[in-house]
Image 1 (cartoon, rainbow, N blue to C red):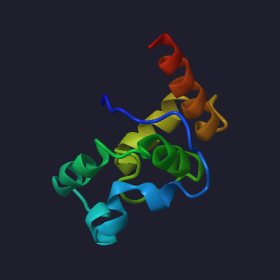
Image 2: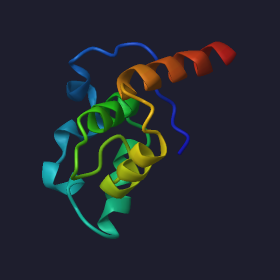
Image 3: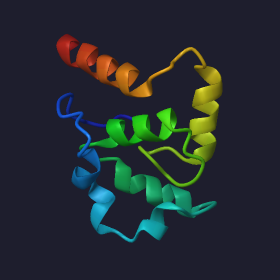
Length: 101
């Protein structure tokens, strides 16, 4: 997924800036094909990376977080067991990508 997200502002208030904050929360906790629609909300969200980091660091089991379903997050966690802080990894990765321009 290619998404334009800002590198700055990784504060604790990220959730208040999420695009889904004004939507019905139940719309993000769906199964099957409905997950595709839920993920679409995330594509242009300014805090997509912060949301994903939160879900990965806390091993959130249900719902679409940061543009990923629970199945996708589990697969990522299995693929990268070496990452102990997704918040740090994603923030540093975004900073490095921004420097490359």
